[in-house]
Length: 99
Image (cartoon, rainbow, N blue to C red; front, side, top):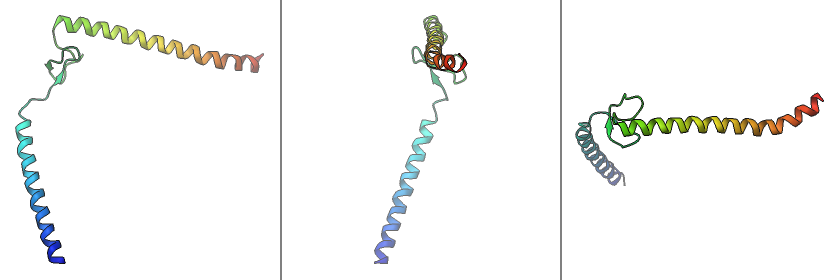
C-alpha cells in the first residue's frame, strides 16, 4: 500500500514540477510588455504614472474634465440630500428636547 502511495507522491511531484516550469516560462514571455495602464476615456496605453489617467488627446481631456465636473456635482448634491434627509429626522427630535 505504501509503495503505491510513494509512486503516486512521486508522480504528483513530477507533474507539479512540470507545471511550475511551464508557468515560469510563460511568465517570462508575458513580462516583455512594459508596465502601463489605460486611458479612462479611449483605453489607449499610457504611462503608469500619468495623472490624470488619460492620454494627451483633446477629446479625452475634454471628456475627463466633463466627467470630473459631473462627479463633483453629484458628490455635492448627494451630500446635500443626505444632510437634508438626516436633518428631517434629527430636527424634530432636537426641537422636542430643546423646546
